[in-house]
Image 1 (cartoon, rainbow, N blue to C red):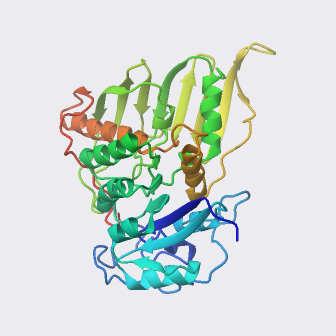
Image 2: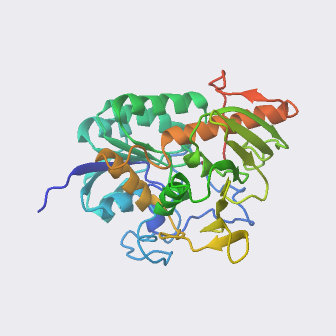
Image 3: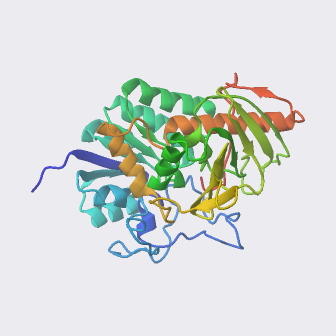
Length: 376
């Protein structure tokens, strides 16, 4: 048997960690939304939904290419030829047993720290509830893990982000901050087009609200640090628990770039002196200024690859391994970029609460937090 390069484990055998590839979530769209929890997410005795099939070999999504092959971190790791999935940790013995049966794994742990200490892992995916992700990332780095994937939202607080991003940076460990659209190769193509001058000198970026559990795309395209923000129109905490910024605002960066956070905007739009590109409705579109046959701005064919919708865990893992092997300097959805976006969002909330007052970055109070829907 061929020796694998990387030993991997998963902490948190819930939906993104493991269960998504076995069946359907049991609280989706209850009454049209997620607002009615049917169990306590903190309870070790929370029930598993009916209909999970540990031997399931198909996927709900039917997409061309690699999309749809793996939804969970466990499946993405197991499918990767140079990775050996060797261990899993969860408080729930039912989930541990199903994970072991699905992947033929006997190294099953109720204690994630014990798994990190005993298994000598190279890669770890952390898909626990949000509150555990920072401390477990720091512990994974201390245990010698060489690459970390965490689910989104990455953290609640700036202090948690500082701890995990700092630990990874100091040890040279790449950190991916969630399975989001930006990990798809089409985003790298978009950034290379910007750098090659396809739309001229960048003048501004736009991004939509809300960003939805740290699913930000705009921070990947920044070339300077955000230095101040102003915001308006935020909303109080919603019934489902979320305090994510729901207003509109502006972000000023050190290189002069301005980001507009605008209701109705695409997920990201980059405007330049000679054109623009936008990611909206799961498609990239490119517009350039031309002189003939008549001067104006014209839509151009998008050069491959174009975005394909579906779960992004495969591409998160691509980025992680590319960083571990020196082909990429930083994951597209790196923990650092997530932390930047979190700080901006907290600054926008402060500004809105102060009547649109300009708020300087970095924020002094690192205990500031965002909360998310109850199931996070």
